[in-house]
Each structure stands twice: as C-alpha cells, then as structure tokens.
Image 1 (cartoon, rainbow, N blue to C red):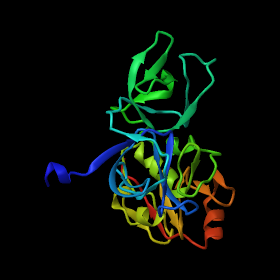
Image 2: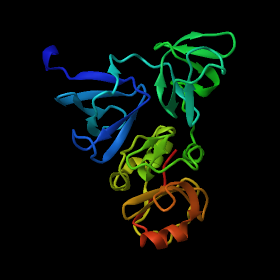
Image 3: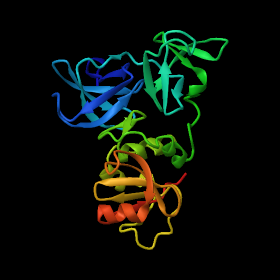
Image 4: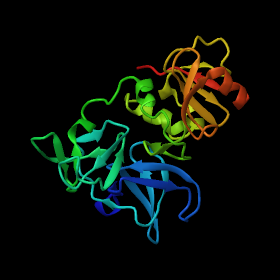
Length: 259
C-alpha cells in the first residue's frame, strides 16, 4: 500500500459520538465512541463519516457535527463513571462538558491544586484520571458496579447511557479483554474465556461469569445475582439470575473470563 492509499486515522474530539447504522438521522444507534478514541475513516457521504472504531472494530456512521481531528497520543483516561470539564482549574467554574469512563485525554499542564489542563484547553480534576499505562481495574465486576443506575441506551457504552453488551464490553475492557459490542458476537468470542455451558445447567456460578440469554447478556455479581443493563428497568441493575432467565426464556451460554 502506498502512502496515498493509506487509510486516514482520525480521533474523536467530541465528549461522545454516536455510531449509526446508516448515514441518516433517526436510524438506530449501534454503538458510540468516546472522547479520544481513534477511528479509521472508511467512507464519506456528504458530511457523514463511516468510521471503524480502532478500540473494538465496530463500524458505523458518525453524524455531521461530530468533532474529529488529528490523533494525539493520550496520557490519561477517565477513571470515574463521568468527569466534568471546566474552563478554569477550580470547582467553582461552571462545567462546559462531561467525559465518560475510559475516555482518553492528553494532559498538557498540572496545577498545584490538583487540577490538570488538557491539550484542548479544558481543565479536569486530576483524581478523576488514571495513566493509560496502568489498567483501570483488573476486576470486571468492580468496573460494572460503577454503572449501577446508569440509564439504558441502545448502542450505548458510556457513563451517560449503556446497553447490556456495552456494559460487559466496558467491564472486560478495563481488565484488558477486548470484545465486540454485540451480545451475540460476545457469546461466540473465546476471548471471554471458556464456554462452561450452553444452557446454564450444571454451572457453579461465580462472580464475574458472563451469562448469555436470547438477545441479552449480563455479568454475575455473585453465585445467584446478575448485574446487567436491561430494558426491564431501563437502567443498570442487579437481579436474581433466576428471575432474568425466566423473563428471557432461558440461558444460551455461560463464559468464565480468564484474568
């Protein structure tokens, strides 16, 4: 491949960016990208950009108005469920935007009072960040618990809204396991660990097991409780596994991540 044929790599500069299934308003969101994530530009349709997220390989269309730019190497990522951006290094400055958990940022300056200035000029409290060189959490359940009560959003994978496969993806991603943003594809992904059962029978459930249902997925909080993002409550909740299995009409698989 010549330099002229090399794909263009861009970076998300908006706090979050939806990925739609087609280049049109009003169509379903299939995933989203976070501030600082990079993507390969696959195609254009007017001001619409067809993007392949370089984090998980998900492909979708970015709407007009999504802020993008030349990639800058991140130094930190957001460690809390969300973190506010401020115009000055003080909590009294009215926030201008918010970033989600795992958003990637580049720190340009550190103030004496614990605040840091990003390369885009915004300030964020330093304790809301973690260096990109270290894992956010090695325990997926601990990560998933940060999202309790987060609203359910189809195609979401952020602290502002998340769906079932997005929750599992984010939880595993913080532990270094990259997977798809699709419950069906996650079920067939050996990166999530061995398949213990294809129907849930005979499993001694443990904290962290990934349980699949028809069109749904969740992560075990303990031997009997599922943590998941569900349209039943339109939020991230914990429920007895037996109740979810009955409502979903069965379990279709159980995987145990190897950490």
